[in-house]
Length: 361
Image 1 (tube, rainbow, N blue to C red):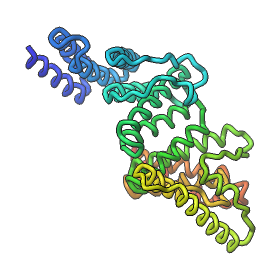
Image 2 (image 1 turned 30 degrees about the vertical axis):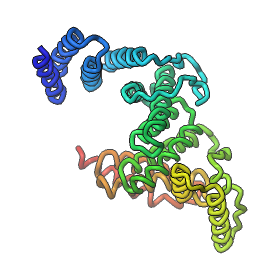
Image 3 (image 1 turned 45 degrees about the vertical axis):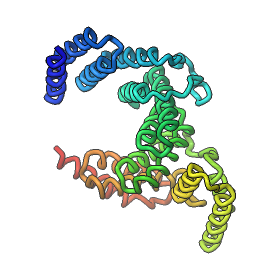
């Protein structure tokens, strides 16, 4: 009886919320099996029931069952849609051009790809990276972000969710240059569409800071290679900076005039191109000053994330304490090279974090 199966499904959802996962699994499994008998194994109702069951496994920390189930349902959806699945999990090279799969326009498959990628990425930790699953997550997020961009437009919320996740997965694979390039675009678009103090914007700013910090740490000696991310950053890096502040200001003004000329030359009446122009302007505002090196860029991003979180979720929120702790430790690590410039500030920040964590306990 479909009504009984619907009750099973609702009961399962309630039990998941109550963290009674064994009972929830029983109800959700019965609902999925019953719907398969009535609607057919490849019906959307059955896929949705299996998605619920996978969510139950995920919340109960049974990640392997959740992964296996999400993979099966996604592959069945792909097969029904007649979409070819490339085997990218054993390929050491996960650059953009290596994924030859056609752009997917089925929202259900894109959603399934995103959810499986999220699950694979969730189980990665700094101390334990499963490279095969991390690369698979990169492939899934590329599929989700490319398909969603084609269907929804590049500034849509779901597109930016997929791109933020892609940057995270690329970071797990230590493809840090591309990860930073992707998250910079997300920061610019979220800054433009959501505003500088929105939590999603702050999360992307935080991710950029963490990725840059990881890249800096992997350099060992702290000397960063010059990386051209786009034509605007190239213009910034070509500016010759003099010692006097007025010369810096003059050069910055000249750069802005050159940028405006570039934007004017490339603008058109096309709506999409106009949106891109606005995005470029937003990105220009977010770029570091011409004199800013990588260490200063990381400092700026960490300060922006910590300050934004303090205003939106409060100083003593666990997440804000975490990023503020990173800021304090980072300032301490670069202070010696700047004649103790940040000694007092870093000590104050770390003391405040310690006080906040004691209050938590």
